[in-house]
Image (cartoon, rainbow, N blue to C red; front, side, top):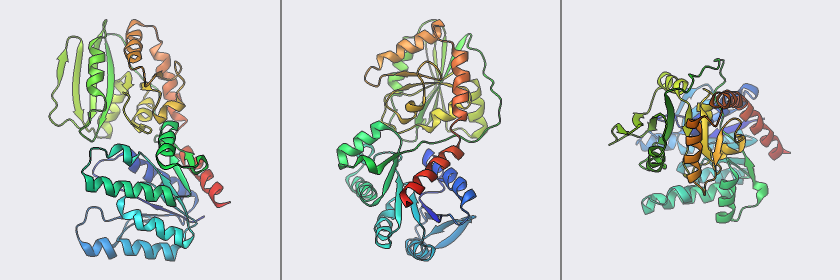
Length: 356
């Protein structure tokens, strides 16, 4: 099978969609050596490069201008083109693939019509055009949750048969389970992300201020511009920014909980990453990763429409109503089930279904 992956391969920060793109390509190429990945000159203002540039940046990975991409598609004749991230340069490529009779799959890591509501008008129009084009010309759409599916169907009148579910994975790991016992301080991680939106951080802080009975240490990962560390009674907040691999590993090894707030999010790779270190997820039931978590066994879930349940869960953890050590061990074992290799095998099954 000749598979051609198109999307973003590198970025200043390693985002979940880029981890997904690289991991999927690496796993598929291991079985199908003719597979290639094509990316674009995002970082160049040179018009020649954006049209006719061509560089090899890794085995089978090419950075190309738009005309060269079209020529590669004509010469390579892939059975499947998989758009692993949605980028504006791809708009004409969807149409060309359809003209050439190439099967197309797109992974939707989010929903532009939902996420660009506060963008300037021109950028929002461009992103909505890209989203509509991907939905119209893709044979299958890979998405992360039933909530995302319901929003897509409602907005774009999609057929259920066009939607396939996927998930993000974690790196294959050999590390042994090791987690400090919760005694005098509950170590909590919250991921704020790249943008200015706080993703519910302020609401979480208000919830944690109401927790009694122990010291709470909240570490906030992500954009920390203008943020300073605070202490409110038994709650201490640390803004760590973006950590490198070793720093993040050290933090997760010492943490007990990762908390997500009811914020629009398709999957949350960071939750699985944290679980692979034995960090217990406390999450709303709407995000994609929640469908893999058994409430009370390998994580704790609360209803998106009842955020007050979050305070009850955390207070019960502090009071010892949950066996945190058992939850932690189960979370660690659950994460091992979702390495990238298994995600790739699942995706290959979708390719085969499409090509029948």
